[in-house]
Image (tube, rainbow, N blue to C red):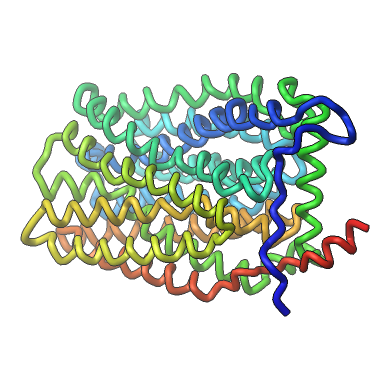
Length: 447
C-alpha cells in the first residue's frame, strides 16, 4: 500500500505549549553556536590524520631509514587502531557525556600527533600511529550522535555536511599550509606544530559545547522543549527493535557497512597518497604539491553543500549518494588511463574523482538515524563507521604497497576505482523506505 511522502517535521513554529515566546531565534543559534565548534574539532582531528600523506611525500621514509612497505604500514596503522576501538568507544559514549569524552580525546590525539615528529624508532612510531587511531576512534560517531540531539530530520543532512565538510576543508588548507611548513621547517617540526592546537582547543570545547539543548544558556527553555518534542515525535516513525544486536545484524545496516567499507577504501587511499602521486607525476616542490593537492577538496566542498541542500529538500538520500560514487570510480579509471601520457588529463580526473568521493557524506549519514531508534543510533553509526575504518586501513596500506612494489600509482588507481564503483552498485540495492512505520502508525502512537 502506498504510504505517501514522508512526514516532514518543521522547526519554524513561533512558540511552544501556548507561550507567546518565539522559539525560532534560539533554534537558529544552533547553526552559529554549535556547528562551528563541531567543525573546528573535526577539522583538527582530520589534520592530525591526513598530514601523514604530506610527510611521506616530504621524505619521512628516507629520514627514518625505513622501507616503502614499512611506510605504508605506518599510514595504515592509524586506521587499524581506529577500527579496533570504534564500537567500544561508542559504548563508552552511550554511558558517558559525548562532550567530555571528546575533550579527553582532543588532549590525547594532540599529544600523540606531535610525537609523530619526535619518535625516531620504527616500532615506537608504529605504536604511536596505532594509538592515534584509538584516540580518534569515537570522535566522528560521537559528533553524529551529538547532532541527532540538536537537529531534526529535515535539517540533519545539512548539519552532518557542515560537520563532515571539515574533512575536505581541512585537507584544503592543510595541503597548502603544511606543504610550505614542511618546506620551511621539515616534516618533523611540522608534525609537532600541528599537534599542539588540538590540546589548546580542548579547553574551548569543554567550555562551550553541551550534550543537550536544555543545558545551553543561549537556548531558551521553550526552544529546548520544542526541539526535544520534535525529535521525540520523529522517533515514533522508526520501527522499534528488540536490542542493539538485532539492529547491527539487520540487512540494511550490514549493506550500508559494506558500502562504506568500499567507499572508504577509495577515499583514504586517495587522501593519503594524492600528494605523492602529484609530486611524482609533475616533479613539483612540496609547496606546489600542496597547492595542487588542495584543488580536489575545494571542488568537493562545493559539491557537498549542493548534495546536502538537495537531500534535505527532497528527502531522497539514496539518490544523492550512489551517482557520485559511480562518477568518482569512473574518473579515477580515466586518471589511470591518462597517467602515462598526460599529467594534466590525469590530474583533471583526480579532481573530479576526489570531489565526487566527498559529495554524498551528508545524505549518507542522515540515512542512519532515520532507520534505527535513537537508543541504537550510536552503535549503528559506530558499526558502519568501523567498517569504513577497516576499508581505510585496507585502502591506505594497499595503495601505498602497490606504489612501492610497482614504482607507480596506476595500480592504486585501479584499486580505488573498483572499490568506488562497487560501493555505488551496492548502494543501489538499499531499500529507500527503510524500516519506518507508516504515518497512520505514527498518529496511532501519538494518540
